[in-house]
Image 1: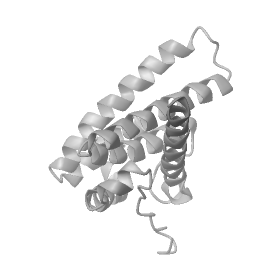
Image 2: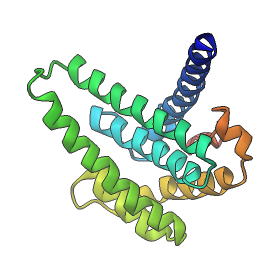
Image 3: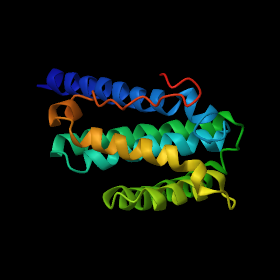
Image 4: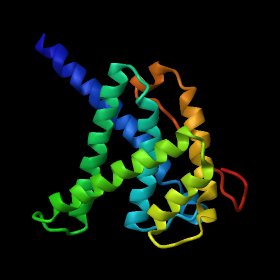
Length: 184
């Protein structure tokens, strides 16, 4: 009995690690930073990782209980990764909880707004939201139109994925095309 429990946890950990690895690899695609207007900064990378996580969470919100449980473990891995990154940047231990709370608030605010835009298929409002969050200054939201389109394409793609794919941590994302070359 006890071996089964440890075996299950190890299996779950592998599924979560695999899925989180796909999410981070997607968010690190160079074209987001070279062609899609996302700044290649610590906060720009947080924003892109948040975008991909939000797409993933939007899909898993429609999942079975085991899919939702796996998604929660992926979210936990996401926040542990952010915590680790903050510490690696040299932020003192006393400041980390405060910064984590702020970043979590930012993430969940984006989750609500982006999902609403995706649900209504409102590319213009999604581009505006992306622009306000990613650039934090009054930037032309048209700069985020390609990223908004990519998000909607992925939302549609993820909606077509079978539940077993979610439960086994095999969710994949469409790879963005480089606007310069028109190729992946």
